[in-house]
Length: 81
Image (cartoon, rainbow, N blue to C red):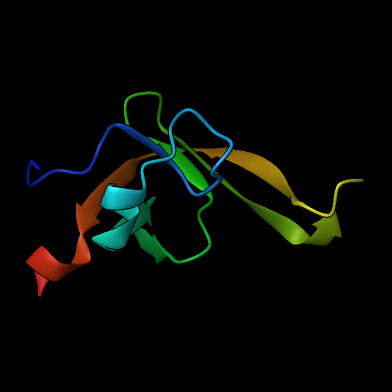
């Protein structure tokens, strides 16, 4: 594996961008200079993250996600410390 996380990653196993091996390495995400712990999906090249919209759920019981745009940075937490 490389030392940089992928350009796009998702926590949802149904997504084509889900990668269990990468998620096992504990990826950190910084959005607009602030470290976020509730990011469900991100894309560095397109500059967006998806985060839950409060406690709202869709009709299947999954959290409703909103897309926020801005500077996105991802790294492996085990390498940063």
